[in-house]
Image (tube, rainbow, N blue to C red; front, side, top):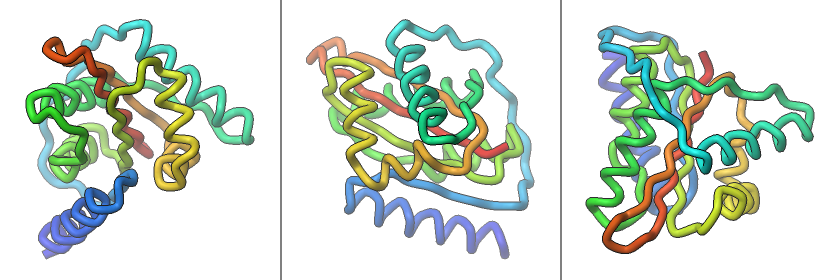
Length: 167
């Protein structure tokens, strides 16, 4: 019953978020099924720069820095690839990504920021910080994060997915 209620609430939050162009967050205390953890992820320079900028900002406002987790970055990369296929930024599938991170890593809370067509990590992070919903995730009560930045080979436009987790 709790899982059905959680899925309904998460679906409602996702739909609201898609309509508001904001970030998305889900929380849960109970976790059931386990799936396999992805341990290998190769970060590119842009991803490392974006993560560094987020941590520098968090520390500058008195918050803890976040630890990167390869599994979360892998889930971020999967979403970037999905957005490239769809040719638009979205939070589609956030419920599935957050459930995976909760199940695999034992996360209690998951949030997500996406961005599209920013030329640099700095410009994307600045845009997130200028958006109340995205800034709320960056300043959120999280302990870990992952990041993926992928370029659409057909258009050259970049897609960013940043997932946060409290573990």
